Length: 127
Image (cartoon, rainbow, N blue to C red; front, top):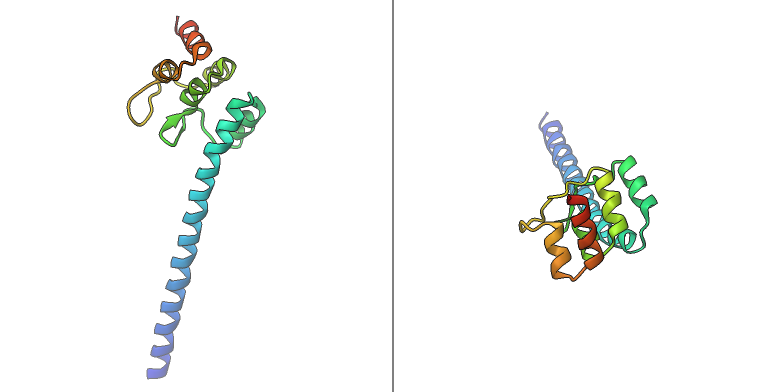
């Protein structure tokens, strides 16, 4: 009887260890996915890769107002001076006044990065 209780306890500890290890590995994968996402989004914005965003939005891997590294995709499009991407994101539901984690919007970033085409597009869309 004592041996069965001891084996049961060992089995429970082993099972708990496996569950904890599995959870830890899953979280590591999520962190790596998020790190890759920023690079992919920036590359897509720089290259005006609208298909990337269409695929990501349709598969729910990205949301149009999602923050990446604290910035919305609209802000990133403003930083990289891409007026076509700004128009595309707003047409797909991006919040015009969406702010970064520090409280600044796309117009602010367009100004400080001297993204004049992006700034002009934002002004036209706001009017």
